[in-house]
Length: 289
Ligand code: SF4
Image (cartoon, rainbow, N blue to C red; front, top):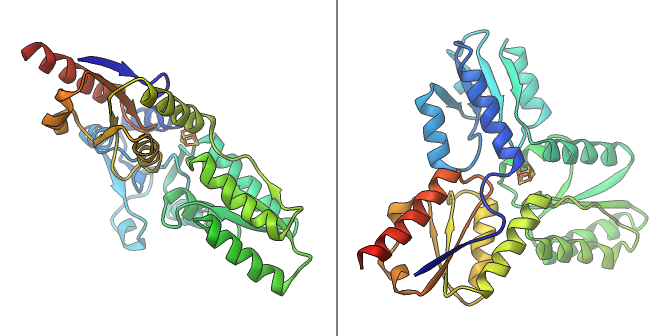
């Protein structure tokens, strides 16, 4: 068996930065929490837990018993300004690990809304990034082109002269975002479409497409809750190749060892050590056969 790695995969700059901030805070000696899951990877979260970094969920009740002076690290996906203010008001020290690209989208969304735009926000409604963004402005959230069209028609019937803009979750598949934006433009031809898909997302998506063309099967490594990893899986699946989605090396199925060339790709929140373990296991099992 040959193993080929995707030309772009694993930790993006935003995730790397968030992990570094959390680890740095953990070394200061005072209690450290992360607001929700810092990133979507169980193994990375486990390593933070071992260093005493605990997870604070979004509920107000979770703040009970958290002492003054505790540090709360804001997740790479960002949080709403209301939540940030709530944490500060409780005397907690904020370490903001919001990815700068997500922060830029938050501020852009806020500024568009302040300037009278109706903002269509394309993304998974329950995803932390979208939930955080919704705190910056009252947006029209849509997940698909059909939904975007429906909402745009509704807005048009209420206000045909509405100023509109389209913003997307940073980890969306480009075609999903563009088709939703196109659906809005069908109704509001002068809608502003902001390019919000992160380059790291595009690079990883393009790399997995290229990878699929030169292998017999693909292994996608990453957290099952990671939106960008799930996207890589969908792209690989669409190629028609056999695809396996795993979180850890010991989840590699027997069937993968039957292929001559196996490609490996990983989401933006997958630590390098897990990718190495997957590759090593694929190669080691080959030697054993
Ligand atoms: S994928 Fe892009 S936007 Fe998301 S955390 Fe990474 S660098 Fe930031």
